[in-house]
Image (cartoon, rainbow, N blue to C red; front, side, top):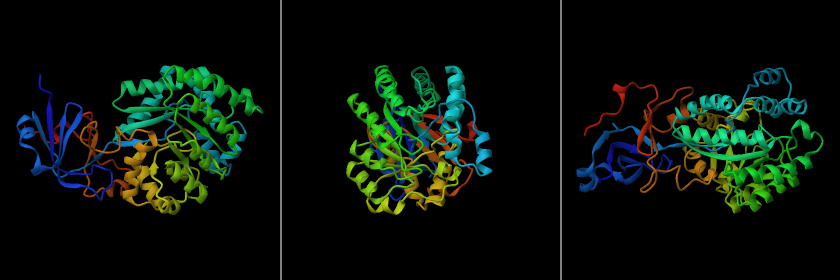
Length: 419
């Protein structure tokens, strides 16, 4: 039986995620779930024209790779709206955390909830991301902080990837905060992370990467390195929450272990930038947390540009410091708060974000032989994706060759099929 072939024609196709590189009269040939051909509409090979079972007229809509959210904490239970109110009254994030709130507040709620409850709550957050064209997402653990509950979170993340049309990358973040039962004993807790939790969860196939919150309210450099060393022994890539509140030297440690990414980076210095560049570490910036915490110390964009460190963006979707499920809002925030360009922002949620996941072979670009994952946008220019606030111009998302999302469009408003 001949594999089905579909042609998507007459579009403005941006294969690399860089708006400067596009095909003005572009076409994409999709065979089954993969891209069989890409190029100008008037150059489609005759054998593809004759073999196509279906053709869609893109009507000069813009086409980009499917979006990638490379840093989220989507899986959890409960809410922290009360802490938001306290911060508005002048209480700092650090004060709340040291008083038993912050991450540990969500730990209590997540431990108390069963797997199905967490799945339902987390699915609503994931659905909002999918509605804006996200096709690959990283989901961290870190609200269980003991083996059974970290396992529960990672199992929910895996189930989301099975039940929804999205690639889910799981990250073990056992070293997220010190749980109450280990109060005053951070080294003992890191020992449990390294000797008990991580090996068990890795053996069960629940872990794609390992993360650490290296900060003065998190874990020290020495404790973070113990986690990294254990991950390396298990053959798992690492990443790090680094230099968010202070410059702890986390980025340089991440570089020594050739981390996939170092994330947040508001207090990153030039030595850290150079180390990241030399080691191929992606800088993941999280404007939602910067905004929500009312931070005034932006990450060093000019240094990252000067040293040509790839910059990715992500929602950091979490209950305490970035309760957002809008990747498009992050594009606008990156431009307005960090002075990134719209082109840099788009690359930050396509090609560079895929690199931050270790998923460049599958996500972030449109190319022959790759999965047929792309977004179709109702915009006049791709800068509108960063310019608009609170709107979603996604016309449809195509994943593995099939339409999975038509945002705000009725059946009659879908792209016409001409064959």
